[in-house]
Length: 221
Image 1: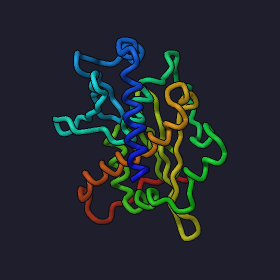
Image 2: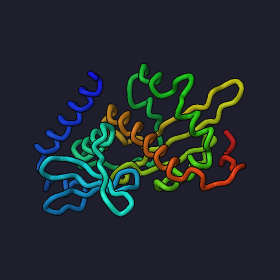
Image 3: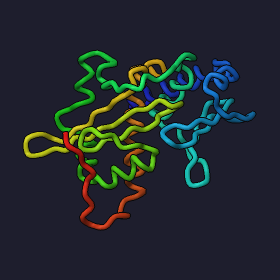
């Protein structure tokens, strides 16, 4: 209960902070669409709208709008909008997410047994379809890897290394070297969690489209 309350408090604080910004400046900085009621942005291939009066967030889906006030969505989207630098630009070079922060954070990203990696390994075709449905492009690295646009041209990548009898399946996350011009390091964790949830959502939507015997897209390590 305390954790849930803390999440709600942080999300509310992020919304209050957003409402203190000059929205006209945010619109110019990000070159986004807006009307009297909403700001419209794209994140992970889907359109979001942010209420200009109370900062509530909705996501477009199946021709309508659904609630998008989950903790990771609020924290990721509002941090990107508020904190991205006016002089932001991409380097075109990948950097491991762990390299943006302190060494001790590595245990948070590459555990011995990762249930997300196990899920994606068990359903590789659904994983592939989900990433492509979100606008991902295949990377020629790992056993499966995809780069996806998070927001405002900023790419992030997810790599899946298949497990075997000796080593468990594992995931690795990459960002453009200049990602910290767009997003704070702490927010990268929110974005990572959001990415995983969105992939699973897309996997569940596409489940059963392939018959038995679907195989993984692989490349040499």
